[in-house]
Picture 1 (cartoon, rainbow over the protein chains, first blue to last red):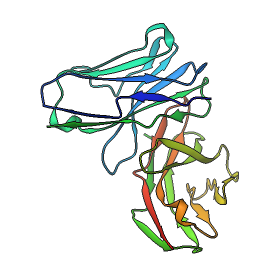
Picture 2 (cartoon, rainbow over the protein chains, first blue to last red):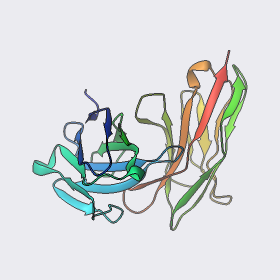
Picture 3 (cartoon, rainbow over the protein chains, first blue to last red):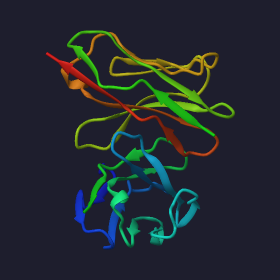
Picture 4 (tube, each protein chain N blue to C red):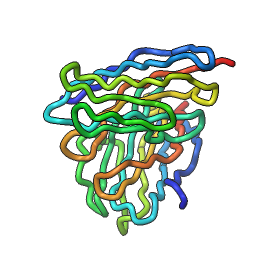
Amino acid sequence: EAGVVQSPRYKIIEKKQPVAFWCNPISGHNTLYWYLQNLGQGPELLIRYENEEAVDDSQLPKDRFSAERLKGVDSTLKIQPAELGDSAVYLCASSLDTNEQFFGPGTRLTVL
Amino acid sequence: GNSVTQMEGPVTLSEEAFLTINCTYTATGYPSLFWYVQYPGEGLQLLLKATKADDKGSNKGFEATYRKETTSFHLEKGSVQVSDSAVYFCALSSGYSTLTFGKGTMLLVSP
């Protein structure tokens, strides 16, 4: 069974540029999460989807971050414009309802 | 709010040594507790979990006991291997499924 797939694995951009990350969850998993992991820190939740609905986006900086999960499967997280402080690893995870979360390998973003 | 505190790393051990990584938490209600492991270049993997007080989670020789009276969930292993070198995260979940993580503890095991 394939795990959570994320792309790209690495991304380097200049500040003020837009960037997007893509996540394909495990087949059949209705809940999808995006986490932000700063260097030397644990992951912090940005947004949680149940099917197509964002049920918890309280930690998502909505002035520059947006996310979507069309058709309740794949998801895209976007930053526009990126700032130097956005350099981090962006993790996607999925679960069946509120059971164990399975994490993807993450996208490492570097903003120059 | 919820929070998790882990001992700072790196923890450096020789192969076959005993491992303890301390974890304490603050939470409302009765959270579930987890240990995740992150190997270099990989995503987080669930190592073990406990859902109620006095439960012991175990996997791959690792153990942790949910201690409500001390709000702790310390990770232990009797004999570490080089392949255990990774970053270990303690986490909790209360109410809904959102996980709150500690900062992580790096473990380095030398031959």
